[in-house]
Amino acid sequence: MGPNLKIAVQDPSFPAYIDSSVIIGRAGEFVDKAGKYKNIEYMKCGPETNFFPNLSTISRPDIIFFCSPNNPTGHAATRKQLEQLVIFAKVNGSIIIFDSAYSAYITDGPIPNTLGI
Image 1 (cartoon, one colour):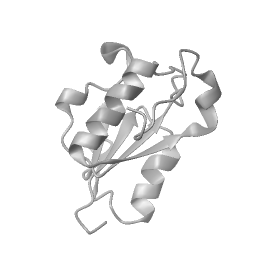
Image 2 (cartoon, helix red, strand yellow):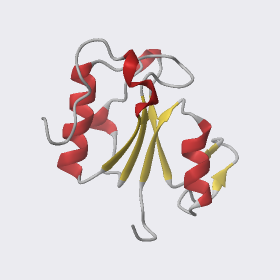
Image 3 (cartoon, one colour):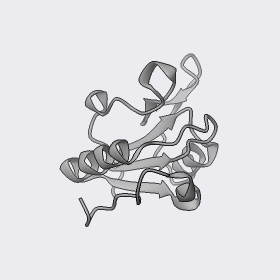
């Protein structure tokens, strides 16, 4: 994981995901006007995207931080959405860091994994 590591986080996101990117020196400069870090891709996950990122608009990240249900929105991704995320990560060679502490909230089947899809 070299110096050009590209990180993507949900927006809004649990602060620890962004903070850990800052700690490992991969967030880049903070852009005051935008209120965001330069080297982090913020994946919109609000009402305008049905609380799931539009994967077709995201550039290839090395690491994707993903939490479901999202903290702070509380929206839980469906199995189909999680499958789309795993496929996106496999195609792009991305690593998903998934907060499985909330996995009990997925009610439409088991959480997909990289081996089962």
